[in-house]
Image 1 (cartoon, rainbow, N blue to C red):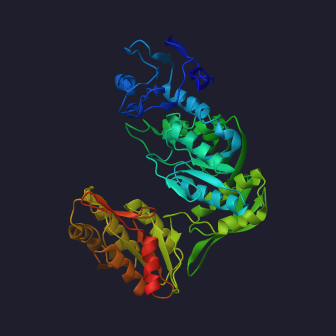
Image 2 (cartoon, rainbow, N blue to C red):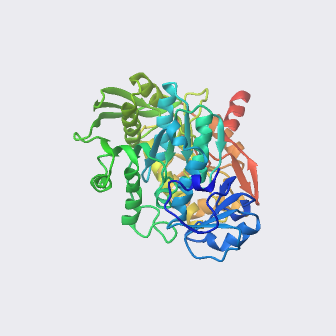
Image 3 (spheres, rainbow, N blue to C red):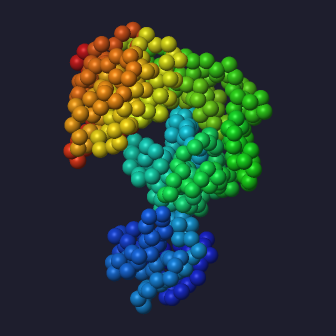
Length: 486
């Protein structure tokens, strides 16, 4: 592709060379520079890639896009822009043939609920017969393929590349978790989303390398609604008025409020062996009786968000109901089929707050016993394991203590810390089964009718990290093996 074509949607200044040079790829990692590439020097909180320009040129880069002054040899085209991150987004979109034009694009922002709402939307759209690609916490997922990513919202080049793969593989829609940092760093620029969704807002991501304060955090989330056609908002959230004020999209609201366009009411918890969820009725945009296969009142909000988008898209009522009734989020209160008259869940809860949230939610279902299997990560502050032990001891009927990513520590020492620093401060019962496989088998072989058992800590992860080595461990595979041997 000719460089001038790549730059067609960008304001730039040609410092030297020619924009009519042929370009084979756009790179922002100097180690990937090669003959014919254009190197874009990104500025981050910790690293300024302008200092890697000499390496990129040495490796053969034909052109450099920068925002600061730099000494560059003759024969290399130099392009100056105000913001190289923004430039990377627009160049990547052109490089990959502007794939947004071939997909329905949906972006979700909010402190909590993004991953779950993405799963709900995907389940609904697939029930309608559509093929969906997703980008978020679980990686880039296209069909059965999962590509790992470093961030919830990857760099703009990876997003555009993924969208091209989705379009080429026959996807009809792309759903992305648009994190506040992804929006702040222009990773989602160059996409005019068909739908933008706001789930909720609470204190998070405040710090030197993230957001300086809550105001900036909220302002970054609000950026989504300046680059989408249809906005879908949680009207019950305290910041609804603020986040929707500068929106340039049309607005649809959801919530329990009578003022919402899609209102939920009559919510109640539902459970049976192997299924734990919530039921609610809706009115306004559509009158529905909905069962959601994810527990807790909070699931109603996520389901409302997914439903509101689906209604705006013209998705059938049948697909909405079927999608929500069958939804699964890998590693997030994920029910795994077992032959007994109890419920077995896999969840990513790996700190005291997430442990408190899931155990409090599950306690509302009045199980015969609430059992939690967990360990704690090695080479991490010991206070985390103390807090998890105390939380489990207070809220669970039985804690099964086992290994997690022990890293360079001895599993027995970690378990002892959980007991001494945490569970011993409560009246909670516990057993110790150091090997995670054996601990899962213990839970299943000793399950009673009506129990809810949570395997906490691993969630979507499929490994155990011990002494610098990652060993394969997928809890779903272990459970299936135990079931087959029972």
